[in-house]
Image (cartoon, rainbow, N blue to C red; front, top):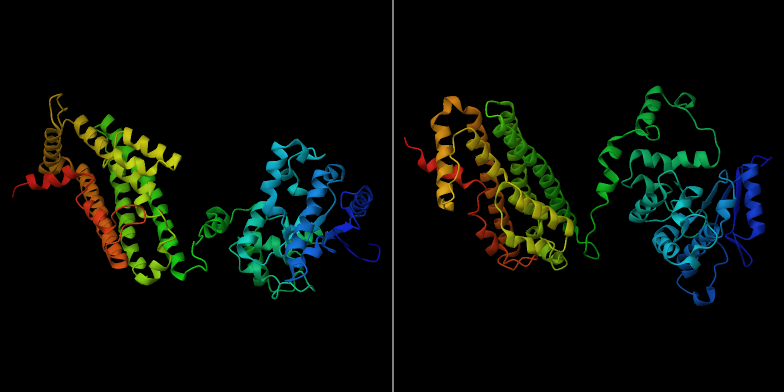
Length: 490
């Protein structure tokens, strides 16, 4: 250290002594006192007599050795005794530690013998050490960063050993991590770990523009960024093709359907607000603000649904043979099983209790659908508001469903006939009708897509495929609005 070295590299054991050996712990305590960073690299792997071929000592032994090092320091209570100032990093992403932490945590909580002498569960000690990024796989890197935290992973090349990264840093740079996280992994964490003086933009030889660009690319720790606000790394890590090797078009299939689900979420968000505004309009018939807001949000719903219809055009770029290459792996994962779309149907008034059985396996979705089934729908609240305005008489006990339907249609008819006084409500009616029309268009495009790609095969969700979908074309959310048009005369 006096000669200018920043720390030491050590093996993960000394003979048959692990890092929790009292003598080794004394050495680590000394490193903390001297401010020396410690890099632990595995060597002399155990079980080599059973791994004589295929580089298994490197691919199997090394990860296990490194996990053993970390686990020994945790369970022995060494980390409880060592000062927090100890800076220690384990090579190769910490070996198999992060990927088996759940197993270790489970043992610690359920089997006293597995607790050793540590004061806390294993996950409590993740802030006591660092690991490098030498895991050579994007998914592994994202998992490692999610487990350890972006402040505890730093660039590792494994140079000069046989499995080193060919283009140092490319794994991190090409990952879907945020710019903030990349900045930490590529330099900031190592700067802190090695107790180096961080270079400020003013110290750089770059131009002022370059310095400004660098600051903009790597915001201060904790600062909200585009990527962190939108959870971009997490979002981009949610696509897991089932085909192996992954079929090229399966990524498209996943992304389009995930996009559908995001738009369905927004539709539910907006339609709930429409219901709330129409309910308030019914409670205060003289108020116009809530009616305007309902119409404004319904316009958004129509535009979202228009986008949903157009997305089928993207799916139609798949060849039937390309879809069939991975279709068999989808099992019941089809649009037939979309809980959110079913929720939209129930919310708008198209309720069918029999459909609940398809969603029993997902308890949360089943509960949401059950709630939608039992609470007033958008259709109910709309006509409740017309009733509060005096445009729709209260239904009699002896009225049949047909009687109620016709009374509602006549109430809508009355609004259109008195356009001068009810333009705001007519706007709501038009928006509801347009939304209904676009949902039918979505169903039709869905049928056309299915027939174009798989013909008349049975659907993966257990339905009759296109034949089942054709039965849904006559389903409308607001049939009374359509019937009112028949009642209008020249």
